[in-house]
Each structure stands twice: as structure tokens, then as C-alpha cells.
Amino acid sequence: MQQAYRLKHNASFSYIYKNGKKQGGKYMLIYYVPAYNNKVGVSINKKVGKAVFRNLTKRRIYYAFAKFFPLLKENHNYVVVVGKAINEATYQDIEKDIKEILVKLGHLEED
Image 1 (cartoon, rainbow, N blue to C red):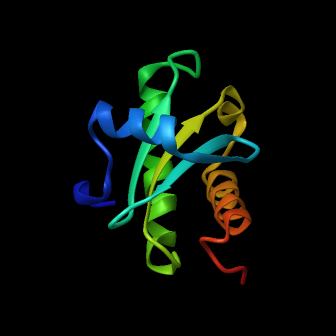
Image 2 (cartoon, rainbow, N blue to C red; image 1 turned 180 degrees about the horizontal axis):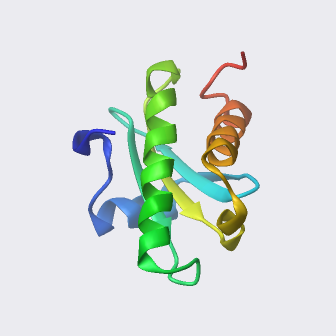
């Protein structure tokens, strides 16, 4: 995913936590607010694992989200909050969980 589509600033994350709605899945919780264009940020607690694993998980989430970007119906900013259950998840599990959450929200059509 290109850097232009990532949320970077603490103020952006705080705004989405405070004003956004949320939807949970098996491995993650996604907060979202309407926006001018689509952006994604990932938040992983230090309890999840070592830095190498947290960074790998972030890369997987960004990559999975990038696959769905062209298919999204509306523009939103998303913050993905990862839980401890992600330790057992494969890339396919992460992709499936993101897709299920986006379908529940109505931001993505089912195949």
C-alpha cells in the first residue's frame, strides 16, 4: 500500500477513535469515519508479540486492505486495532477477516 493511503499522525488516530464507529471481527476491530479519500492506519499493542512479529502483521494488514481499496463503495478512514488472537492467524485468515468486516459494514459487496 502506498504511503499516501496510510494514516500517520496521532491526531488522526485519536479523531477516529473518538468520532468513529467500530465493527469487530475474529482477529481485529476496525474503527471508521467518512472521509475525502480512503486511508488506513494499524494499531498493535506491545502485548501482541515482539517488534518483528508486530511489523510483519502490520505489513500483512496493509497489503490485505490494499487488495480491497478499488472495490470499496465509499471513502472512509480506517483504524485497525489488532488483538492477541492475531498470533495464530495466517495471511489468508487476516484477509478473510478484513473482507468479512467490510461486508458487514456495507463498504464492500459480497462475491
